[in-house]
Image 1 (tube, rainbow over the protein chains, first blue to last red):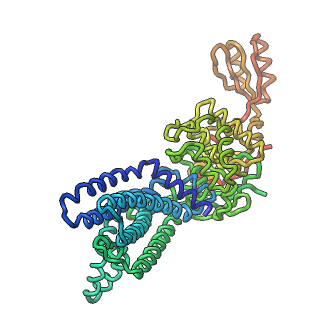
Image 2: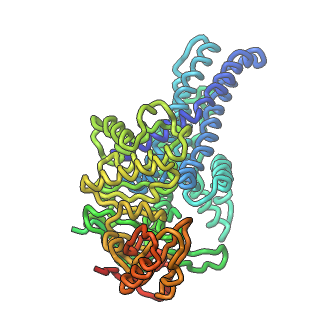
Length: 257
Length: 316
């Protein structure tokens, strides 16, 4: 950890100095605008609209940052040759990769936390008080953070062997397919023969973002089961670990010409 | 103990998109560097110098062979504890200041937190970069970045330094300062392996040099011996060009140099040549033995055919 943490902190510092957190301004404008105007155009359901809009924004902002920074995180180090002097120090390649991951994931979590504060402020402004069902919103945000963890790992995996353009295509495609992964499971269940095998492999290969999306549920104040929280936590950590392991295996064997 | 021991280290890349074909960048290389030595790694551009350094640093993997730095195999991360590396074209995190960058590298090398800031400041002072605390690296000139590259290589006080073209991008004063720094580091007992194609730098600093061309080691020589070596020839310089024909008759190669004439001839004919010049009352300016320069050694080795085997050059 003595080498992973400095790399992680430096990654965070890079994101901050490259003004990545400026996205918060756009988010703040969006959420304030929603809080002020949603009430006027949606009678009785303004709270639901605000929660849907706020949480979806946190998710989309996070995913876009995870992909755009994640895909360039490793590639940029190789392209700009900043990796040369880092690896000349007693840093193992997997430590470098893991440090970069922790740094970006930490940045995204911090970003999501700030958005979360802004979002709850807007919710308080609209509802005038916060109740017990609003605690479920925290679960939805936690699931978004798990989703960001998986997307960061995937973006980094793509960036260990591919150009930013291809990596971004892969990453966005994976995100889109992952969002509808429940349908893939349904197709697999309905298919026969080789198609069933292919669909089943595909369904397990892409991240299952369907089960991480409880935005609509919490907007309607429906509780999230503790079993789902545990399942999603174990799934997201395991998936991220496997993806990072693959990324490290590729990165370990690369020649930096 | 040897500071660096390389045995049959080679690198072949696969090139081509569909049909991969091998391209040998470094042919099997074996050499050793003693502790405390300044070792110059010479060669024209594209000779394989940077490839060798990348292999030793672990940025690329060897196709064959092994190497040990201070007794530790290069694939062991501990090998990097005691090395510093300055790349040929230094690129750093340009959003950091030089002080921040050096503290970061010091941290990666395990320098205790209480010492990092001081070590970073000292290293920057040693390379001539003082009072630039608040300036981000994106505002640095190429020469300044080259100095930062050297500073980060020494910030953790390593025993072994790999410097890839450390003088490139520096103005004459900067080159002189870096030369002095390398000499200081040598005096501190550090082993320095530096690649360059600037022969005067190697001549001024190195104990030994190796010449590389087309990925193949062409020869290794002790600089002191190479420079003290004479070829059994002398050079006579005199005013005017009287007696020039007489010396040419003795087998001298002559040429005019402004108001003077310069002749190079075998040592055995020196007395005859001086007698001939005295006869015509020539005003002799100087008589000197012709010495080898590193450039002669370099050119000689580069002219060798590729099938020639590398050899240890000892002429004393």
